[in-house]
Length: 375
Image 1: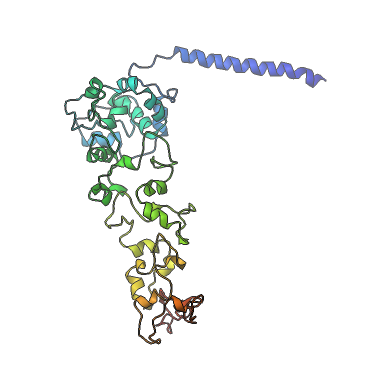
Image 2: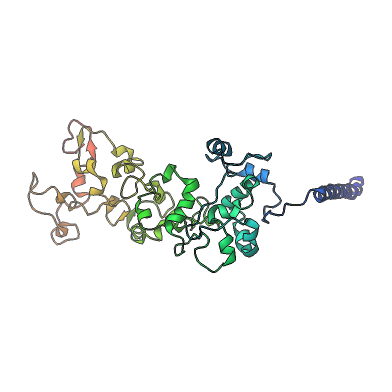
């Protein structure tokens, strides 16, 4: 009974103590200096710029390196430098006389966009860097100087817009992104098939919203982004034999680099075979006895995106083999669907695995008795 009687008193002490702590913290906040006039309201306004800077990932855009290479940049202030405090404002070819007006002027009209984008990494990064470059770095680091746009908001082209049908050309849009994201996986963007087709970065990415777990994609996954244009390739993954892309075990970017490469199909390696060997290392060899069409190109026999034949083959066996092997060694009768088990004239050479029933190591053999790929 004594324990029960003491419990309300102990609980009251805990509540009063917590209230005292909260009151003390509120009082400390009330004594803090007011926010600067150029600050932009966001859901993360409770965090200081230093806290945001610590949350940002490391980049190769360090402020110290930028100032070392550019003596015209202003000296660093007492606040900690962030990788984005040397961000420059891109020039807008359609508004060459425009001047920077600051993020506060942008938010006066674009309050909804400000709230939607406040959680994104791009906006958080530029706000953290705005301590040294000024408040205009938050919005105008990507959209360019906004004075002309503020005078006539309905006129197209006075601000750099990132939509496919915008007055801003795709070259200018991509140039803004590449000012920070150049090199690496994007070193072959210039001259790539996507760049030549008039695509810009925002046709696949949306840095102002969080629609994907990573990559600031315009859709929830990279496969959905690619399928927006490549619907014929996406349909192949619905075939009987296909790569495990619909199952979520791989993505288009496992084989392709959408930002450009030295190959026409935007492969991540130099050749088709090197790309396939990334997963199918047992087919690489070297083999004592090699199958020439296999060594030349895996696509000679396989449709890598999907097929209605077994193991992604472009044609059923033995019709696939007879595209090259006719009138040699075996009886020179051309096999057809009539010889299948369901045809009018079943032939044992077409039933089961066909040619592969005997020539099992068709990709190559290291067996001394394997010149015909029997072993």
